[in-house]
Amino acid sequence: MDTNPDHIPAVSIRDLEKIFPVPLRRRRVVALRGLSLDIPAGHVYGLLGPNGSGKSTTLKILLGLVTPTSGTTEIFGVASDRVSSRVDVGFLPENPYFYKFLTGAETISFYGKLCGLGGGVLKDRVNELLDLVGLNDAGDRRVGSYSKGMLQRIGLAQAMVHDPRLLILDEPTAGVDPAGSRQIRDLILELKARGKTILLTSHLLEQVQEVCDRVGILAKGRLVREGSLDILTGITEQTEYLIENASPELQEEIARLAESRGARLVKTRQPQLDLETVFLKATENAKQPGG
Ligand SMILES: Nc1ncnc2c1ncn2[C@@H]1O[C@H](COP(=O)(O)OP(=O)(O)OP(=O)(O)O)[C@@H](O)[C@H]1O
Ligand SMILES: [Mg+2]
Image 1: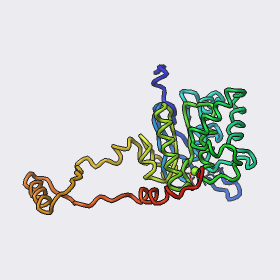
Image 2 (image 1 turned 60 degrees about the horizontal axis):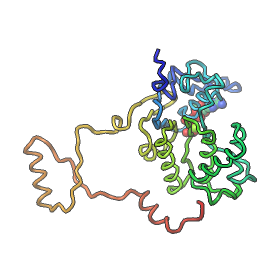
Image 3 (image 1 turned 45 degrees about the vertical axis):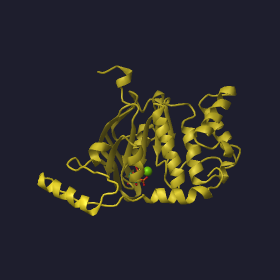
């Protein structure tokens, strides 16, 4: 057995199966079938899949909130059914709920106290986290007045209050507008740079592509694809060039040259800005404070 702490995966899932009984209808829902995967420490892993494919169930089993029918899960080598496995984990649930009448700062402070922080250490931690999630200006406002994007960010701050090594984020950008989800993605990359391991779920594939090192795709509770993004999405037999000021003659010449060497020019196209860039540029000057 490998006992070097650096080699222990942040998350290890083996042969996980979950069957939910539906007593009234006398049927069963098979939410997960034979799921196995490892997430090395320091990676950002995206668990993808359509609605009902078993993403949230996987996270809940990992966190010890749901008992699996069979199989095992471990966090940094500690089985999920042991309380000590949760010491190093922060969790952002699918639709986080916060007390509407607490301010952002009070909300983080509340969760900090639950984790045993207090005094000057807690105060510093609250300010540091408000800063990290970009909510310093809104820290004194009641959470009930926050936008969806701000709520997700206060949820992230809550998940990080005890500075865990692993963050589990269920749909961190769901329902958040492009500028807000950009901020959340930047935050995820910042946390990765600080050495955190992140497991997130999503069905927003373009966003996942930007932040994840590896992805697993679930369908009806089964892992149907798994691997690093380059390997999953790379088209190895093709090469893309981006050429400025190419005249039609030059383009024809390139096509001829390619053909004479046994290659084939598949297509030429004009690059375009993606819609998100257009949206962000058009709205950035009309931003609401704190939003
Ligand atoms: N407590 C429960 N009792 C019965 N069935 C459940 C329960 N929790 C989840 N399920 C079922 O298990 C399956 C997987 O649900 P899960 O919430 O894990 O999916 P998901 O991939 O997170 O979906 P979404 O994208 O909608 O969040 C679904 O068919 C769901 O109805
Ligand atoms: Mg879910």
